[in-house]
Image 1 (tube, rainbow, N blue to C red):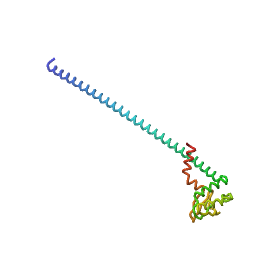
Image 2 (tube, rainbow, N blue to C red):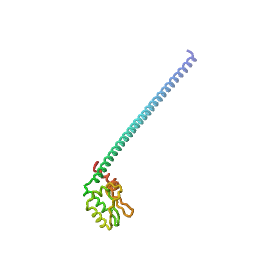
Image 3 (cartoon, helix red, strand yellow):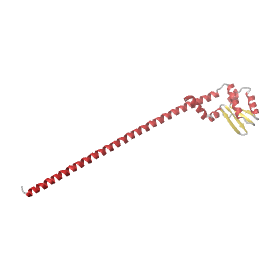
Amino acid sequence: MTGLEKMKNQILDEAKSLAEAKVSDAENQAQEILEAAKAEAAKTAAGISQKSEADVANYTERIASSIDLQRRTRVLSAKQEVIAEVLNKAYEKLKAMETADYFAMMMKILDKYVLAQAGEIYFSQADVNRMPADCRAEIEKIAKAKGGSLKICSQEKGIEGGFVLAYGGIEENCTLRAMFDAKRDELSDEAHRLLFS
């Protein structure tokens, strides 16, 4: 082997060795890039999975909240229906009270609302027909005790129960319906407390 061939072989060996080192470095870099890409892909997949789980949990919570709201709304509606029915029955029971008890209640209401002036009192025709004999005298006595007077009028005012007081064109509605409507919230609260507590 000549010196030129030796040099040529030595250059080729060095080049081959250098090429093998570069290939090895390139393979190592490729492996590192691949590992980094796999790690990034795993991290991204985990993030997507966590977001998906969070979205599912959030959606499930919203559905549960919506169902609970609908349930509470239906329960409230049912309670309101029951309370309205109880109040209507109480109103009907008041209208149908025994005559003596009914007019005793009317006299208490009258005592609260009568004014110290001359006026008129209107009852329903049904109440006028069932009015006890001493009731007219009791009405006048209550009015006189307050410094006024009342005349019982027969003009129909569309009253179901209770009465209307009239003083110079100004009327005080003391009908059972007006009393119930004025106290509806208070009565509803009391009925709720008694029925659902």
